[in-house]
Image (cartoon, rainbow, N blue to C red; front, side, top):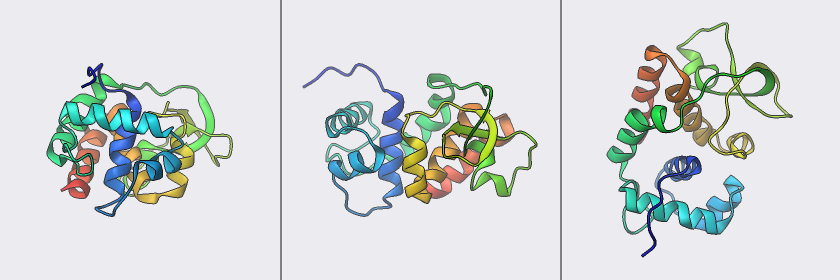
Amino acid sequence: MKKHSGMRPHDVVVLLKIAAKEGNNWYMKDLAYELGISASEISESIHRSVIAGLIFEDKKRLLKSALLDFLKFGLPYVYPQQPGSIVRGLPTAHSAEPLNREIQSKDSYVWPYSKGTVRGQAIEPLHVNIPEACLKDSVFYEYMALCDAIRVGKSREKNIAIEELQKRLG
């Protein structure tokens, strides 16, 4: 068995893409195509998540309570993010669904994206291909935006994001 060398940012992306599948059947090649990540890296990512106790040994079902704990307690410390310069991009964190319905802010956060239509402070995504992948899957987009709210938000935003993730992940 391979040694576990720690989680990587795109491991969170892969886990949340699986969550977005909402119990539907999926294959690693589907995840690779939809996320723009190589099939071998998807396989390695899932392997790391099994070792970390975030997905069952069958490599299909998430350990949702462990994933929620990791997102809540680990994400802001392991993959913190500070808003950057003003760029054009795709809204994230409190600037995107579902939080933009509850949180009004003059500050917009975006993932830098050349085809984006919103200007805001840059938030580095957990993987470079997230904007493209999110445009193809609205459920996944919400998961990723909620994660960014945990990474960059203040207490109120983080708490609302965690509540939303708990509702979605059960």
